[in-house]
Length: 241
Ligand SMILES: [Zn+2]
Image 1 (cartoon, rainbow, N blue to C red):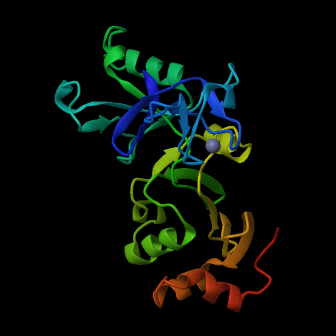
Image 2: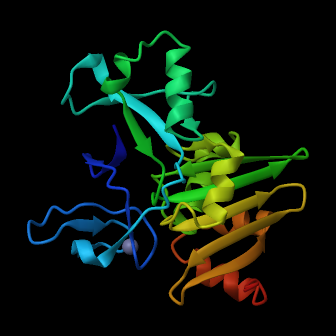
């Protein structure tokens, strides 16, 4: 089964999307409506939603109930080599992986294929000539992100961000192309160039800003409660578009 977990509840994929923001919609918790969009936090009638592009398969993570007990609230996720939740290009790729790692096709029905969408931030870390891409459902904003970066120093950046999962490059591109929607902020840390790019809605729609990475970390050292105000006062030309 494929779908998402939202506030601890499983919502099965409906193959329908929100007309307003393009995010997948799920069965409404309100009996008067058919669907709800977690991106817009609204309920919709079935005539108010659109069909999803049938050819598009979103990236997924793989989970199963801990100890194999169905309806057990605790889930265990398939992890990658660095103990982060592993993200597959799509459900068929995840199933292929499970089938070549000791699962029978009968076993597959006990797994949850959790779609990656509309949860928290996505970020890219550039350095040593390579880029790596991550998502974290636990971090909603630039301010939160920088708070974790500061608190977790001097460990590697990825390990400072809670619940960070590495993304395949294709998933990152799909997010950039708006095929996977609903993320609240996009960040690019370019360490060799000393740049910290931020794409976030700070009150007037999504906008792109660029700050020196070192200046962001210095600002974080004196507390992140008014991070935006301080950085924008220091770098009035930071807004790029
Ligand atoms: Zn929506």
